[in-house]
Length: 634
Image 1: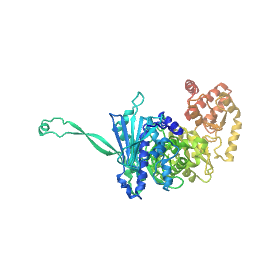
Image 2 (image 1 turned 180 degrees about the vertical axis):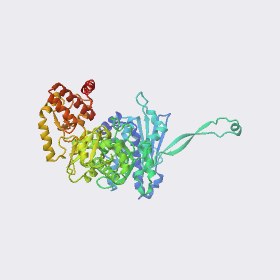
Image 3 (image 1 turned 180 degrees about the horizontal axis):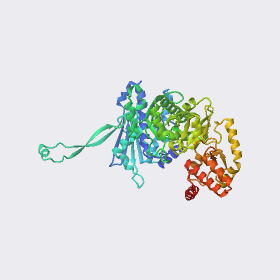
Image 4 (image 1 turned 135 degrees about the vertical axis):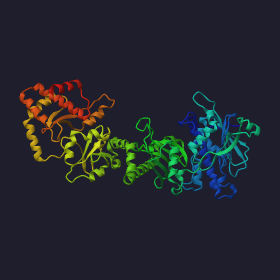
């Protein structure tokens, strides 16, 4: 019996398979089941026009059987089978795709469910088997043939006996090792779970004889004596797959509870989803999808451990459990799946990020998610606010990341707490509610709503009756600066040097006061050398004596955030100490200046500066000195 050599390409591929080109060896079962389904598809298609086939759709099936004693696993189908020449062509070389050729010869439309190349996935069997035997009888042939190989050394093809049309693939599994439990693939529970995981939606039944146990019939005497019954094992044929995917059913067939039950079962979430969308897309990208927005963020959502991605199927066969390329980071909270016939099942399925069709699907999915969120914001505000509390932070990061490239996509989905009744508002709602004379979108930053609402810097804006957006998340100000303007309205921090609220008369009046007090202000600045760039009279303070503001691109809040990061580089905002000229402390400072006590004026400067730091929520350098200065100056 002549041993034939694999073609060069196949030999190389087989060697890669043996050394695990795939991440998980368990996918060999998915591949072999896919090939079996492919073979059945071909014969089923032929049966539609050929009465000689003698099989209806309900007669087709895939069988799995495990032989623990022989350490063998068998996958059988009653599909179209292969001749000796086809065994040679499909299993001896990967240069030709049996499915693609079949498609071409029969002029099939793209949506006919032919799964993919036979030979490529078949080689994955060698990841778990030391010997693979294929026994096949082609439809219309009287002869059956056996293909056998132990790996890269080659294969043999011999004539054999087989009664029915179809293919048996028998794997003699590798011996267990410290790292690999190959015999685990003979366990009925593991086989059932793998079929459920990868091949649940193959459209032909996948059957297996499963061992169950039941109590033996007891005699009346034993029952009366209360004896524990003995158990006996029995075999039962089970269909392991559900066959019809939920996402391929018509929406009219499904109820809300169907979608919710599928979500909690499929994605292991105890909570029902907040929102779901059933998508059937045709056009540049053909796919079905189920998309879910969870009601609560997973415990690890904002950590490095969290993995984003949608399950990816091709014709009901799971290709990838979490395909990250289907979701942008700012929509990473979405769970669900995508099933497309446009994606090929071949060796590159582990590197789908290079697939052009996948990119088209991803763009379409992104538009769908955005559209659904906008609908929820418009029509189900309470539900959207619930969503926002769980996942809004990620959307803000989306605004800031990639240098603000995604701001147009996301800015209308943002919510911020408003100074008007502390309610959440969109940017559009803020701008629509602006008074005619208002120039800017005002915002204030801080650790909490309570602290922000008490900031001295907010007084002037509030006195003018203008709304303020309260920014409490570390990313907020960075996101706002990335947006820059919204509907031609510039964002303006209440701590900015010019709020655009002062009349020319007020500015002139303040300027005159500042000139008169220039000597005192210079001495205060000198006492705080290195801490502030200057000391000025404030045009924003009404009742508070003092506050800190900044000029330049880095605000005080941004300084806090950036310096909290684990880096060696520290940034510093250009701090300005503002003093209220209408507060009695201003008069006190003037009298100290006039007394000529420069040392005392310096102490007031340090005390007021530390007070301003505490108002901002910034730690002071020397709490003991601060406490002593209060006592001394009182």
